[in-house]
Length: 202
Image (cartoon, rainbow, N blue to C red; front, side, top):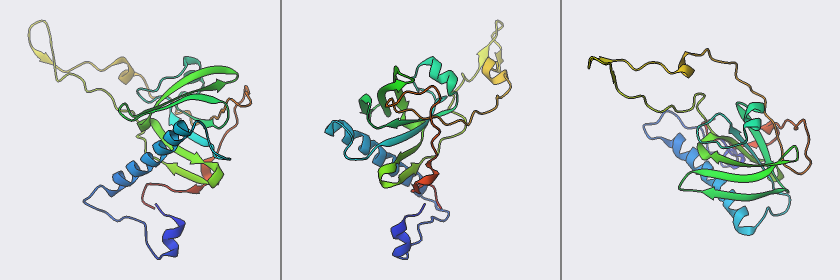
């Protein structure tokens, strides 16, 4: 992680191996910046000036709520744009979720996005981009310690059907929609054009 001002001040922002979880603390701080940006928009009733947000999140993450048609179209990840035509933006700190309603291809939809599912946030108006670590495999509920058969003997839990299926190829397609100009083929957005403010050590 680095900042333009860090280099000017002769400060090395890279963090060596530490017994303190600085990386996690820094990432939590950046996530809080993102949440405060959303909360500011809610309080002010809209985005000021040219500010607008790109939000990338994992659609296969537990707790993500979205129309099934969108989940089938974007089974792994999607980037949405919040600029003009969106409403119902809400930040739930207790539940650690962001919810918003906007249009996909002219069809309205409400999304509920866990903060843990968000992999990137950007405000192109000031070339700000934040990226977050999201594990490749979503957390799975812990299975019961043991299952007893009809004779009262303990046996190992059976593998679930999903665990027995072969892993499918990850769909890396990243799609964008803002609801401003509905399109059947959403524009692909690259966050590489923005200045990186990556919470991971640089």
